Amino acid sequence: MSHVSEPMLTIHNRHSAACGIPPTFSTEAANLYIGYFENRHGEQWIFTFNRATRETSLRRRGRRLGQRAPGA
Image 1 (tube, rainbow, N blue to C red):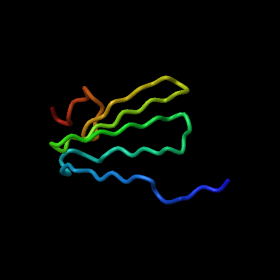
Image 2: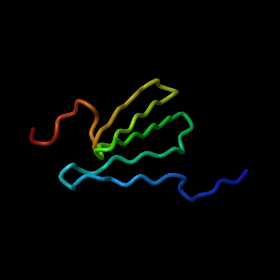
Image 3: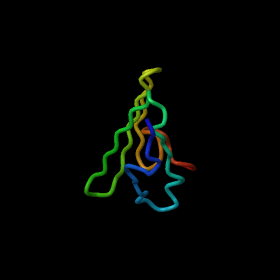
């Protein structure tokens, strides 16, 4: 079975450079579930779940939820 190398979904970062470098995610790992949500205010949220390790992560604006901004 051959795979198409073109992206199925592209999500653009809607935040200024001051928010930092946005995270990157790849669906090449079969055990990684990725969920994305953007509200009407432009806030972007990414949820990940590793099925193998059962580790979860919730990120907003490129930072883990609860992580302090640099210099804060």
